[in-house]
Image 1 (tube, rainbow, N blue to C red):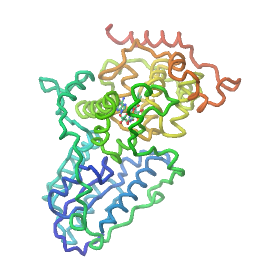
Image 2: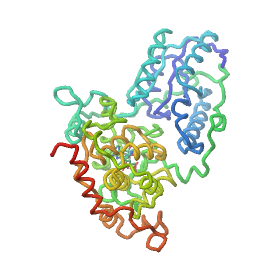
Image 3: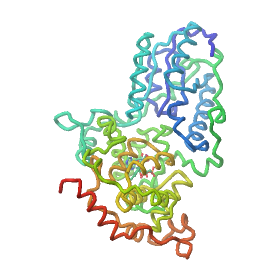
Image 4: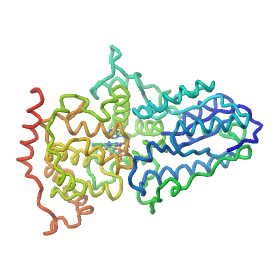
Length: 453
Ligand SMILES: Cc1cc2nc3c(=O)[nH]c(=O)nc-3n(C[C@H](O)[C@H](O)[C@H](O)COP(=O)(O)OP(=O)(O)OC[C@H]3O[C@@H](n4cnc5c(N)ncnc54)[C@H](O)[C@@H]3O)c2cc1C
């Protein structure tokens, strides 16, 4: 990369979980330095190397969204500056390039990320930038409230959702969800101009070891916040055969939709839906304050559970052939589309931990591999809720009955018939475990290592 730029001092907006230009507080922060802004992205090899499927849908999604951003930036005469590698190595290279070109980086602006890996990465980069005299500014963009903004009166983080959500609602002011005018401020004057730098094109997926996943329009949900869905959310959200939820999780995960835009719609149309956005903040706060909960039980006593971890049972669960129709439909939907309805996520997770007595981490990793909206905080939170080991979890003796859940939430069997076409025929397997026996085994096993509640 070289510059022939007149701009001698620039600011950089390094995109991570905020892949959009509109209502973006990080981009706005970079613009407020009054230096020309360069928008940058790094394909992080530390993350990509953990993806074992060359047709990982999320990589295709990110690539497509970056191409759109690049087009958007080009309309202002700018472009997206893209790297591929380990972030620290990429930044070291970039710093050398900029220095050689006589360009001073005033500051790098990032949306704060609360996951353990991101925290470690950003700490290392903060010290690198400091050595070079470059400002490193973390901005709250991904959540409404972060870190210790909503805490108990004694300043400690909440570990129970209901009081957290009450305090969250009490603390909320219009400023917290006001739209940032980042896109309105974009112009040839505020963005670094493309003519002034020769920067690499967006790397191809193939060059990073991935292949594009076709028919993206079939599996990438619409970004539009459907007001009609929000209005009937309270009544329809639990029925997987119905289009009753927003399907925004992928976009909120990568910031292709602003959380503040989502909240503005929620406040207008649905209290219940707003509560789900608060759950999202809650889990981000939990992972920030209790990073061990990403991999270990939030309640350490649960790490003593003698899991059965039967590999044949786990394979049946992964492949959707447990003989429990709602579980099988959910698992097949997940593997085929990258999505699973929340009600079904709860049922399949409970089934794995309780009926099959399998370590929640096995399920959590399987979801991590397949979910388009995979987000460590919400995923570990959801799994630990189901396993009973989480901060605000289902009690261990509460064991969902997967048949009763099927009867209640997929009464006319439309969801199951869609994903399990052989349901009701001799091709469909018998249940791999008996519900009543498995339930008692789960409760007894949990009880053997936990103090009575
Ligand atoms: C075992 C398990 C694993 C999960 N893993 C993830 C995950 O990796 N990523 C993820 O985004 N959600 C996860 N969830 C939460 C939830 O299932 C999904 O957010 C939701 O199904 C996404 O569909 P939607 O966008 O239509 O949600 P909607 O019902 O329309 O909700 C709106 C938004 O609120 C947020 N949200 C909703 N429910 C929750 C919740 N329980 N916890 C945190 N945020 C929530 C999401 O951002 C969602 O897009 C998990 C739940 C369980 C039980």
